[in-house]
Amino acid sequence: MIQLYGRRNSINVQKVSWALCELNLEFKWHDEYGKFGEVNVENYEKINPQLIVPTLDHNGSVIKQSNAIVRYLYRKYTDVYEISKDEDIAIAESWMEFQTTDLQLNMTPIFWGLVRNPSEDRDQELIDKNIILLNEKFEIFDKFLEGHEYILNNKFGMSDIIMGAASYRYLSLPIERPNLLNLKSWYDKISNRDCFKKNILGTFG
Ligand SMILES: N[C@@H](CCC(=O)N[C@@H](CS)C(=O)NCC(=O)O)C(=O)O
Image 1: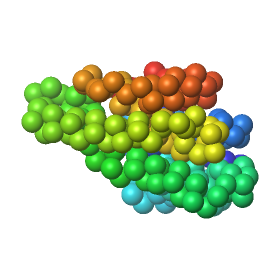
Image 2 (image 1 turned 30 degrees about the horizontal axis):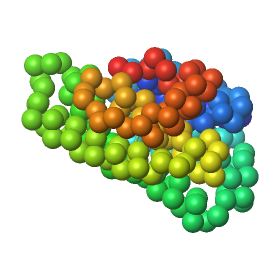
Image 3 (image 1 turned 60 degrees about the vertical axis):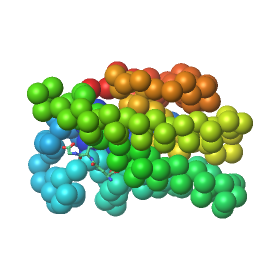
């Protein structure tokens, strides 16, 4: 049995619940409507001593780190690692890393500064600096998307989930953005999927 721990408005949990949905996997969701900073699960520290989310328990195997969980699910339940060229998989995985390292670096101060923290604590200079950098990074992704239906093999998959969850946040932020036409046409496709609507849409905040 698959068990997912973590609240549905966490971007990192969303990647996993979206992947589980796309793969049609049943799972038990713990603390789905929980709050930031609390994981309302008894003895959670035993499965995740960092007390962060998500955690996946698959028949007693405990897996942490959202991107590793998504890769695990796609490796286990699809043939993507067998049918894809190593080079193509590496490129897809590099976008997954880009999300979790490069994008999050700038997304976090903007999201917290504009959305989660009280406005009196706002550091506008820090936010503005990060908006410029975040827009530049999405411009790089937009260029990559030119000529690509999806990130890997022109087929929707794990890296679209990771970059898709990040793009939902980016496109929901109350900031100015460049006109990214390739991002828009890719995002229109992925945001039309049932699993996006069930797991991502309406979670901003
Ligand atoms: N690198 C980790 C980051 C996990 C993480 O930072 N999770 C945040 C939520 S997005 C968290 O658990 N914060 C405390 C909380 O939600 O209670 C991953 O990708 O899974």
